Length: 155
Image (cartoon, rainbow, N blue to C red; front, top):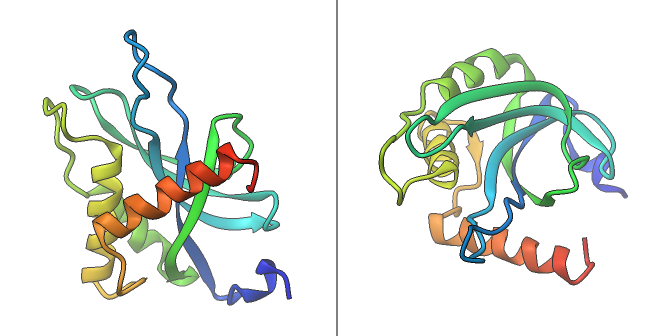
């Protein structure tokens, strides 16, 4: 059975996708960009779907939604982790929720990773199927494992 066979046709899989951002002027690795993705079409190897993310910088973060985007097409893709499911018929409601997750500006310790976590917590609190045992530290560890898997050629 492929991973394509495991998804209920009445649901979208909720995922966290991360992208490489490079290094700063001192050579330090920048925090990876995280976004929430819903695979709406395509295959396991070439998924397409909706992307929900923050764009901009610390002082200008803004919510952004993109539909029918190739999730793994970017050369900066560093992994995708499934965190739950939403019923297809509730997509508009989920998009409304995501568009209203609070955004913190002017705080260098806060970024898109914090926003993704807050969005997932909000969905879970509102009764959506986000993995019950998912924690902030657990998500950070899963994403770090994906980066390592990408670096070693395992994904």
